[in-house]
Image (cartoon, rainbow, N blue to C red; front, side, top):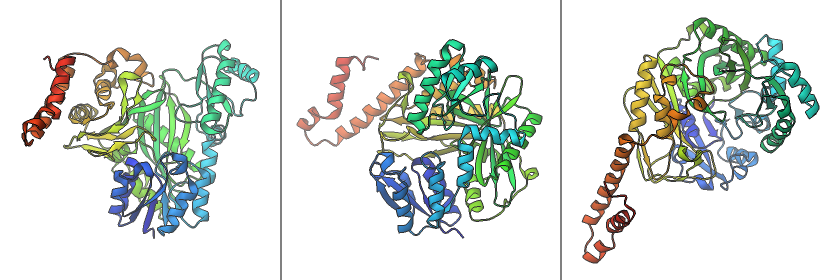
Length: 504
């Protein structure tokens, strides 16, 4: 029995795991850096332990500190969440060695699937379609030129240990190969400590579609259907939905069967994701396997009705899967938007700061996985994602309508977020029609540019009015004239008149 779990992560995913623990009667232990002392995941957990300074290497990536905290709090298991150490084979081994259950796949599986070249070979052996390309790492720029010419341009150069778009280069001609080869190796070395790269045929107009899988310790594997993740900016997902509007029932079943075959080929245990590229002709190819919970897992939970974290914990404790493939169904449609503290109008620069006001949307079919609150300061040291906004409805059309409404209701002041940018995405005709691929953002730049007009202006005025009302309420409690003359509202009014911001 697992009675206490240390969550080796922070932010919204830490709270997400702890919520499932609470429902299962399992105590949770939070770990936190000095910068996260007032983070909600620390307040939510049953117990908490500081594991280092703000820098990730001194805290959330420090295996020794996390293991020491696990011993101190006498936990049974460690859940890595996603990011940080979630796909670190050394961490998984260390947990087992120290007597803790690692809630994730075996270290050997991580190593085998973390190396993209090794993963390609394993998938070919399992009969899973892969993109034409090299099965060994490239040894020189000259070899890269030869292989690219054999496969035929365009090709994609990729880092073997890569992820998140790092170490990837699209090559359209022979003249570009040497420069791109050197650049990709350099980026791979700085990002992953390994400069191994390989080449694949570039899939034109691709859809990024992934399948959620679960495997137990007894060889049982099921898939929990698909997620469409093609709304991406620089290979980073922005909006996801389930089911995919691009694939039909027969292709969904075929891809699901291949996802299960891929997981069985590596003896997969736990929750994972098989990612595919699907071209415009509906041919699909294995892309990679993520040996952890995905950021976008909530949309699968909404349409399938399975708590993936609870299943992870049950599997890790030795229980067999509770359902068979034929018992799983998709119901309705779910969409997820990633809410980030970043400035979409200025090249998506991170926008850390203090949240002055927070209004989260509510209503039927609305879910928010977040960790922030009014007065909380978003730290500069970590990913800028504030949380995830998820909606569910009976149809895709209704889900889009609901997402449009809740994005309008979502208000955060004190820092800049990408909420307006997400609103524009939802309004793009290609998105509403389900007619998009991974080039969605590039092909809809005109739609996604900020549009000046009454709607934006009225929203700005609403914020100004609300702030003025707040300051006026402060004034009403000022005891004397001197205090009034130096009060915030008068200083603000004077500044506004000088700058012209109050000229309505």
